[in-house]
Image (cartoon, rainbow, N blue to C red; front, side, top):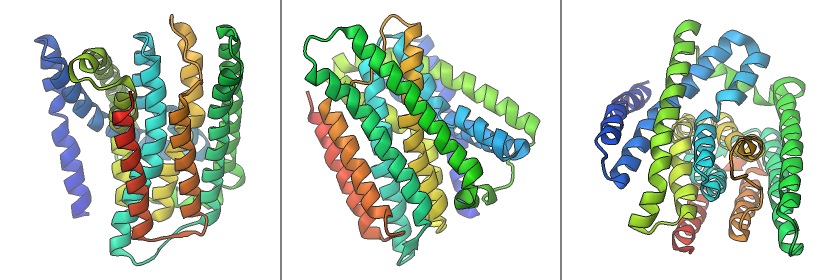
Length: 354
């Protein structure tokens, strides 16, 4: 309880970055400082979006609550992604999708297993549920790889053909995700029963709805500030859009969720921790990515699902190594360390990638 209170105080304290970010925007603060201020301000708002969503879900019941979680569970990533698309930053959006998947599978799952493994000699979890999520991610890898392979093996293909393929794949991925949701909420909900037993509502439904609305508006405004700083930072620091998307934007969008997963693991609630990390990676690949593809048609520059070969290789390796670790239903701290080292290797490679 004391640890939870200290974490809550940290998030409350981080709300102070909101007025600082607004002042920095009003007085034309240097882009690098404005990027960091906006990013730090988004983190607590993302946390309160998640907390308000969870509170409202308890009042709506499992079916409507599950739909609400799907709608707002990745609100921050969707908002940042849509605003980046509005500014024509399609490469940043694709990189953030890659980074969110890698971050959840390697950085957060690795941190959760590593820290919990120091406290408990053997960590056990529901193998069936973990493998169901992991196998769904393999389908996501296929859906991301096919457009890229199609584009690379069909030289001179018209751009609209690739866009049509991306749209078709996006729609099919959404169908698969809805099937996964039906699996989790109805036909096999007993495999995921621990999630609903974790906490009572943080607030009543009126307060939860207000906090959800206010936090979403705040994230939208701050994300607009964040997105406008990307190109100036690329030019001033020499960072690539690939690195900013994969590491920086991805971590900002998922920071609050990451904290929850690690906290649950330290409490030896590994089923819930893995449900958060694997479930979030699945939502990014099978909900956020296709929604952004379809949303991009509202703007001048469309988002295709043609990822760079290097991004596809890292996503595939992350999914495979995660499958290997969860397939026996047990884990220990050294496996968590392996995941963290794998993420570190990839992070360095993305930083150095031209």
